[in-house]
Length: 244
Image 1: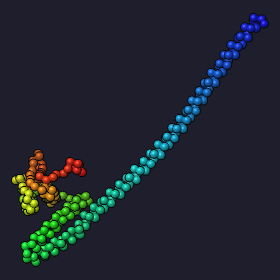
Image 2: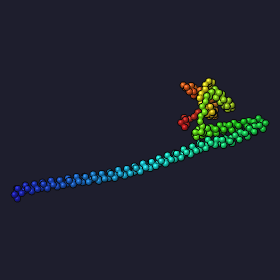
Image 3: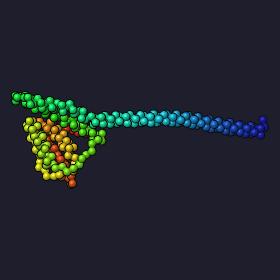
Image 4: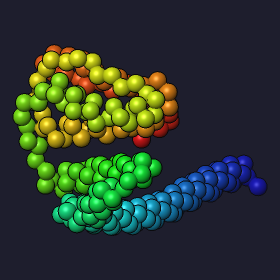
């Protein structure tokens, strides 16, 4: 075979190899492009699925919020209706107690023995305590219902303390406790009835939860205001219950 034919054959082989290599690279690139296209399609489907799931979750949350808001509104309306009813029915609630007071008063008039009179006084005190508790609950209900407007006026703390001392001193003596009111010469602007009832409740609790020692009531000036303190030697409120 002539030398020139051999050289032409080698050139053809090289050209063929180059063409085959180019075709293979092109096929690889096409394969990679197709693979990338498939990956992109898969990611798009996953994103669409996740987006639909997110929208569905948001719709459920919105519906849950609507349901919770409606339930809260219904509960508030029911509570307000109950409060208004209790405030309006205060007279009827106290009527049985008033009848019991009259019966006990009639019973006291026919008692001749000391033991009988003592029992009558105990019943009277129990009825008075029950009436105070009921009136406190009714006052709270009236305040919640917005049917009580504070009647602000000048209130002498000295006269208020003197009245409270007369009410609670017999209770303190019965339990063997001391009850002291520090002298105060001050007039405050407040609702006389509500302020007295607040102090009645606090003093009642102080005496009720104190087994030995006593209760002290005093005041502290804070600028143009006065703070009334009720201190006792009772068990106090446990640390884990104070927040409640």
